[in-house]
Amino acid sequence: MDEESRAVGPRGGRTTRTPSGMVKKNLWVSEAMAEALREKAFYERRTEAEILREGLRAVLGMEEDEAEAAVPGHAAR
Image (cartoon, rainbow, N blue to C red):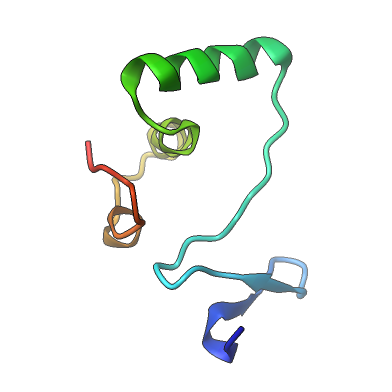
């Protein structure tokens, strides 16, 4: 992995960034939330990640940025 794709995390450790600037995060949810997310993704024919990013943008008051739109398979809504 090249040096440009490595970044420093919030605690000073190394983290990996995709070429489009995306950073991986892990999220723990209840069984009920996981099932609801799976169903919503299936019925809307979207990925679970797209739905989670949409929810985070809403809570954080952010709009979809150019880097996120560049993610392969990501359909702008």
